[in-house]
Length: 90
Image 1 (cartoon, rainbow, N blue to C red):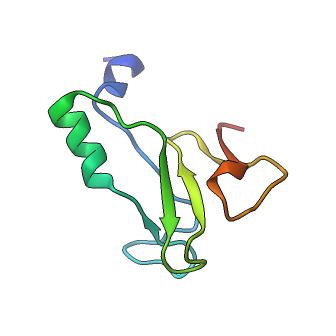
Image 2: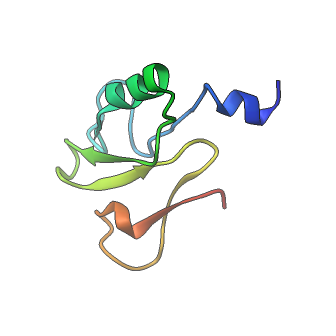
């Protein structure tokens, strides 16, 4: 099928620090239903999602990067803010 075709209907995300079901390190919350609904019903692929922690450090945010990318700290800024991260492969 090729990567471009698969990217049209599949996204895989890993959340660093998130365990199965509920995590005490990083429990991510975001409107995943709206993202899926927009993609399936309106043809709008998910944009960069920002997830908020509800357990470890409530209010902490990180970008939700599509695999194989992962949120890499830029080296400066608030470590609890998504703006201090970029989606990286290395």
